Image (cartoon, rainbow, N blue to C red; front, top):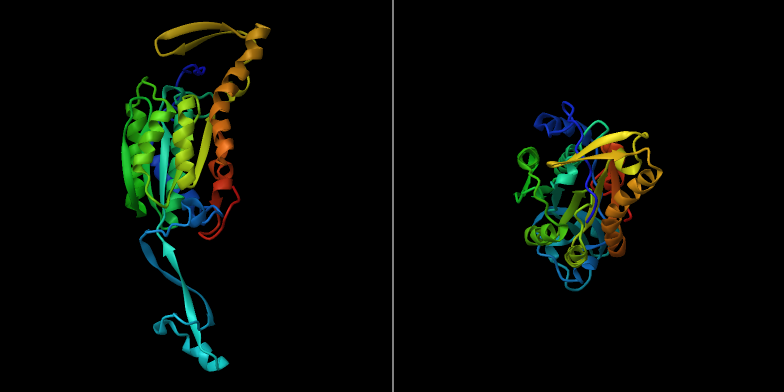
Length: 315
């Protein structure tokens, strides 16, 4: 069983998700949008024609007329100028959707620098939602763990983002100590995902189980997937030597960090817990970004962001 972080004394504004802060993150979304993978839809779906609903068409280029081209797409200006029949080519602008999957398991309700991992995860999800909306995408969300089974169906625009933000706030307030393995959550994600949707999973990886490999592979074969892996400074390095009272749920335990063996094994146990999900993602070619609770969101999420809708990032 993966080690679970202790519960620190909450500090104002750092231990719970505030809706007004999530809304204010819209300002960070100005001038940026979510980057798209270089992989084409054909590569992800085996060459089967997509049935996505198009929002419109953009002119791409003119070329020499070929038998079978539609007469109504003739480029008469180029034809007159060159003396050879030319036809216009158009590229359909396809509607994209993003699903944000938020881990609400007990291990997320922990933090020693500025805010809990659960709060930082909600902030990251909010920023990603605002940026997706700025690109004209639809945004949905799914909460799992901590007794949360909520889903928000994808919707576009500011109204779609606000529905997601309210869900993030509500899930944080309602989360309990009931854990849910990642494999069970992925089964729910598969039912909610539709062709063309992208998935961003925000989790600390502590509930990743061996059974998650199969459904994660099935999702990655059909969708663009990225993982934002939350972590806290105390999980990366033990505190200064001394005796500390740590609490998980109703269980309280004293740990002596003056003991060299305790200090040596502390970070290794947490690293091993995260390594399970990281290894699964590496085998499937899924990008993993690590996010600290005190990190600058825009900078930390930069690999997932682009200056324009047409920018790409190599996964």
